Length: 221
Image 1 (cartoon, helix red, strand yellow):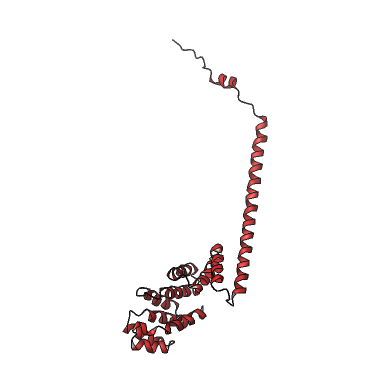
Image 2 (cartoon, rainbow, N blue to C red; image 1 turned 135 degrees about the vertical axis):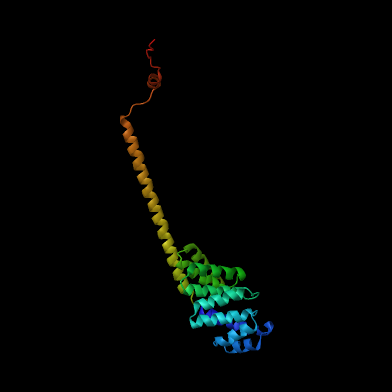
């Protein structure tokens, strides 16, 4: 995640001029870790989505997760170009707080905004793994490796994928065994019912007729 954040920052540096940024923003960009400058930049130009992104990352680095989430969420209200990175970083904050479900939702939103954001697939896979959504995690790991086949983490990711498949196989076998036990129990019950019926009498037409014959009742005058 840190590697991606650093990459996102470098990429953003290359497009500064396109935003017509304020003087405060130029200082905040040059001195990225000084959040006070970025806060001043935001006050000076509250429509600059990059400021929200940078400031949110600063709060992340300072350990103020909730402030980071609040700042990045506000950035979404003005964002036109960096929704994917804003969603992605919100997801990272939620993941760090072990809010895996909402983190997965944020990564999904990032992917919806930018289907080529490989790191969002990886992080969503990790969130889904924590939630025990094994099929989804396996699918995301697979997509990530297709997008980043030379990733240094590939051996570790493949080990995790193998473990997931092992768990899925074990679950399938356990379900099959449970189904077999249920079927055996059902067979035993059916057999017991069949044996119990051995001492019963068949119902014949005559027996039914006899039961249904009218009963003579003396009517007193």
